[in-house]
Amino acid sequence: MAPRHFLRDDDLSPAEQAEVLRLAARLKADRLGTRPLAGPRSVAVLFDKPSLRTRVSFSVGIAELGGFPLVIDSQGTHQSRGESTEDQARVLSRQVAAIAWRTFGQDRVEALASASSVPVINALTDQFHPCQVLADLQTIQESAGRLSGVTLTFLGDGSSNMAHSYLLGGATAGLHVRICGPREYGPAPEVFEAARAIAARTGGSVSFGPDPEESSKGADFLATDVWTSMGQEGQEGERTAAMAPFCLDEAKLALAAPGARVLHCLPAHRGTEITAAVLDGPASLVWDQAENRLHAQKALLTWLLAGGTA
Image 1 (cartoon, rainbow, N blue to C red):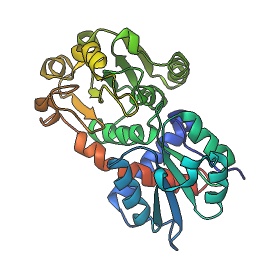
Image 2: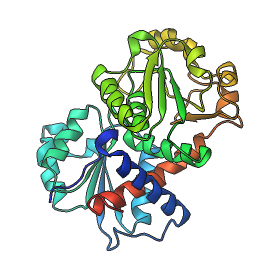
Image 3: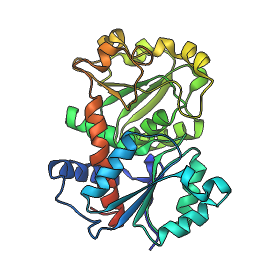
């Protein structure tokens, strides 16, 4: 039987996403009670980009599931000498139980999955960050007690991997997702349309607009991310100028629904995409988000290793 992969948020159906999130809650309540990797079996975690939260959460999570985290930086492999992604997949598949990859283009992780006989997880690409949004959905559910019908506004770079994953993952969960940023930094049309189609089935909605005040009004959650991502070095000046009106500050938080909470996947630049008063204030859930990377990824791994069942 072909393995299940998690390469973008809509690789999980609404029912499957809910199942993984229920499992994440159980694993958070009993961190060492589920050990599908006992042996230990190994999971390869590949890094083409710097990382703190991804590296730590996967390493700790794999160990807590009874396994061995085989953390590999691409500089130390033959990737730099031209070994194909498919050949790497064939080698790794014979020795590890699963593979997670933090890389650049989405085509790379898709190529890896195409040749892998074990589950492949997108640990971040330029186009999507689905593990982060799984953790964010767990955080929202813990805070609001539900997902369906919740309104989330993302302020900033609407073309970013976080915006894309909020669209797909949020629509899958039945959220009302508002992406708000400069028109020239809008979501990829094919991602937006895919999210719109999902939302039509789940009762959620998706939108994109350039008015941060209007988009913040009545939102249950306000989210943001850095304005210049890895691989976009040299664009800081033009991006900062375009996105300055979309800073997640006290004024926008005041426009949101009473008791609204704030999300940021970190690392954060206080005073740029978010103010220190908001990031470090009582509305912030960023440290819960960071912790929930551990629990959501453990649940995802457990679910994938079981062939797509809890």
